Image 1 (cartoon, rainbow, N blue to C red):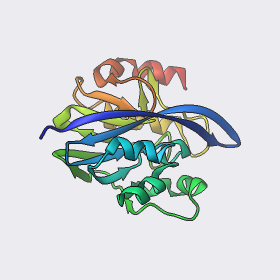
Image 2: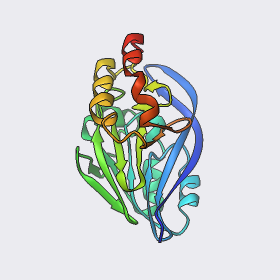
Image 3: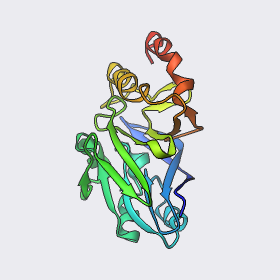
Length: 209
């Protein structure tokens, strides 16, 4: 059975520091006809469960704990029996949205999450959030970057729990060292590649985001 990547776009709101913004999020489903992993359970647990269909959901992996990436995670876990994974450095952010329920398991740098022939290596990439991670699957030549790297530059760092020099270090040291043909699948918007983004590092630093 062939491992494939599916994208579901869900809509909702991002709330932090007293502000609220309408957003659309990419929910990534990686697997085959038998089992899958969900990256970032955003906004609509029932829609995500419908996309999973009757396959076994092995894990719900959170790239970070901003509410728009985790708001549907507990409900999806309840619907499917899957465990929620989050880097522990993002627990303070998680508890802003889910004060009464912690994630089930902690992500650590370098660990590998397996399902349906996919091996997702966790890369701790703080900056957008303290516990932000990216998930690299060399067999699919793909990295799932959450809100760390987008088409055109780094994720935002103007709000609480974020830090611009740190996100630049994460992107330079953990992401731009990947093969240039690696596809970058983001938390919002369109995909890009490492090769397309790497030449712009100095420009991002100069801009200061």
